[in-house]
Length: 337
Image (cartoon, rainbow, N blue to C red; front, side):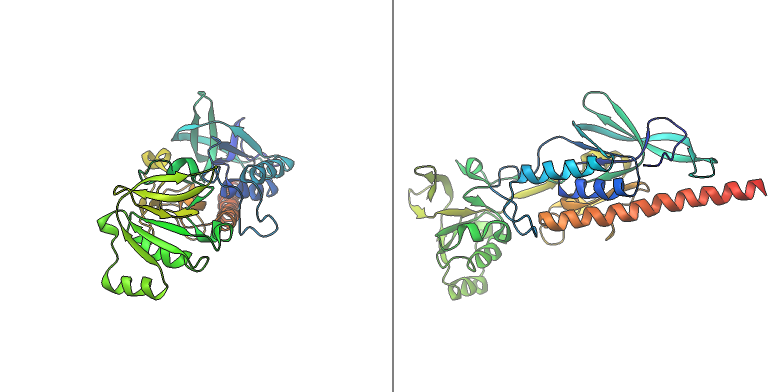
């Protein structure tokens, strides 16, 4: 690992979030001989899932095991992973950044990442990979089963609930699309229209009927469980819609508030509507020096895609540092001429 700063303790990059995107970014940066620290609060979005799916060579792996393996790989190349919570990210003052090989120095902007235990990490770049938080519909028993037989993504969990009766909770207009998706995995799908705003249009109703999806009107009150397994959804009317699995549309919010004060642009995702950090395809945000990757940028990414986004952002971030260092080295060369 190179030391690119004349100031002791100045890191090249602090990665906020130790999920697939953050650890993949840190691994790429550590292998690029950058000083990198990952700060992770230990609350991955998929913590309650029975396994990670669709990740080539790791299909079905326990989410925690995948992250443990990733942490070990980051550390193998000199990266540091800290358990902790980031409370604030703020601009630091300029420092005299040493240029590799030449020993010359030039002012460079920094950031201060403040941890919950009052530690402050100084760095040249910040990469936000803090992911999302899911907020479930207010239905009794739903949260307790989430990640098991209450699921949200057919590509993540469809195979595991295949050929079983599936009840899709219609709490948003997206539920029609979700019901159509799950009909690929089961011939027994029921759309429970729990919110009138989620009621299918006549055209949508025709499409649902064509796929033999039952539509039931009524507010979902509670999840019915027997012998540690979902057996149905009880409505306010008392009717129970049989189901061995329940599909929900979660409300998601990007964990981006830490960088709001820096002026990072945030907007709704065009498909999911979830707020997310705006970044270019390689992770560069609207604020110079702040990068982002994974679900905090695109709420619809699965784990393998989030990991790939972390790699791409890290590669471009490293090039950004190289450009800065090269510019400073050119200036130093000219000053000596």
